[in-house]
Amino acid sequence: MQDVVLDRVCKAYGDKAVLRSFCAVFPAGQLSCVMGPSGAGKTTLLRLLMGLEAPDSGTITGLEGARLSAVFQEDRLCGYLSPIGNLRLVAPALSDAAAVGLLRAFALRGCEQQPCRELSGGMLRRVALLRALTADYDALLLDEPFKGLDRETKALVMRETRSRCAGRTVILVTHEADEAEAMGAAQLVRTETFLAC
Amino acid sequence: MALNRSSLLVVLASPVQVLRRTAELAVTAPFWASVGFTLARIAVGFFLAAALGVLLAALSLRFRRVEELLAPAMLTIRTVPVASFIILALILFSSRNLSLLISFLMVLPVIYTNVLAGLCAADPQLSEMARVFRLSRPRAARYLYLPQVFPYFRAACVTALGLAWKSGVAAEVIGMPRGSIGDRLQEAKLFLDIPDLFSWTLVIVLASLAFEKAVLLLLDRGAKRLERI
Image (tube, rainbow over all chains, first blue to last red; front, side, top):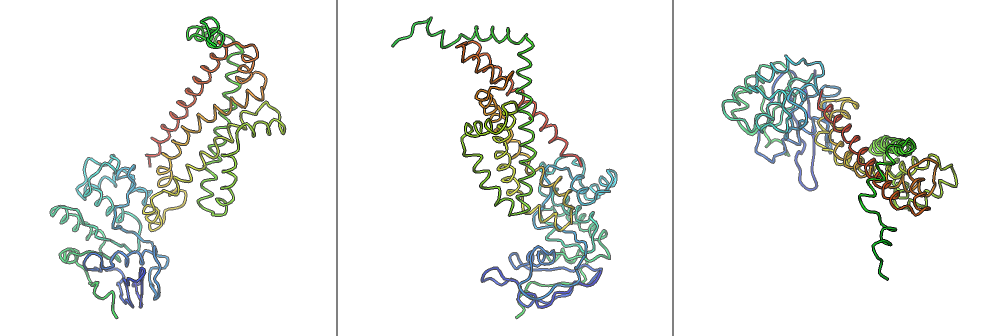
């Protein structure tokens, strides 16, 4: 895995520029944090990294051929599948026991076999985050993965997430400074730098 | 001109009469042969059309060209009167498997159109998720698309099943393949045998209902299995 390097990346929707000559390096094997208020283009940046959008100009290197995993802004789970089913969708070899263990670690009990459409928002968020952590990945892209969690659960989930992705390339998008701190971000990119010039 | 009671019974049959006649028919071997004859052809026509409709819809989603090519064809099948197809088919082929061909033609556009609509309405967010996680095509089809398209397919089947029976029997009435339900209806008409006509109509309704229930039961069983991974 190499560093993820963005070189003079521009992206605009109509007249509205989101990224203008944006340069950044997300170091390999470390957790970087993208911080800024809502609507500043954090999700757009992640979509560019995921390859779901192409930059208008500039280049993104370091992710060619990399296996990606992600928590999207929305949960994007299969509503008719159980939490275990959703994990197994991206990790076919995952055993029932291992899946239950993962869910327990995120304080998800008793919902293992329930269809996801019946779960609450906070539970779904945790399943989405677990799915991202369970898939085989070289780079992990997280779009406000802790939103909708109460304080206690959030602390637990952040601790677990941090230990599970230690030493991996992670890009975490958030608008809360304490999340960046709790996750031990090695690097902080602020959205003010999106429109560099 | 007013009809008195006895002349009314020539053009109508009492429910008791109809039920009695149906019961009489139901114990004869030719009755079941006729039901089997028609049921088999309509069922085969239906299943072939359902399978091809799904396949073509999937191809249309993948290749725009296929959709462009199929759009006028489907429109033609939908709008040309079924009677024209029946007569054309009678000229070109024998009447023996006419109901198979006609129910196939009636079912195909219904399944195709609905399944394609379902595929087009599939959640783009889940498709993006599949892309990011690099789910294989068969895996995405099985676990993401199939459950999303299933309600469309099921609704299409309900509509198409009724159509298949109505058009299939209409084709038999015109083509009169020996031993079919349509042949029996035509016979009843020839002899002005009103109780027979109503009995066979009742039989068609019952057979089509039973077939519909059986297909939907199968589908819903299948849907349960979809939830396993």
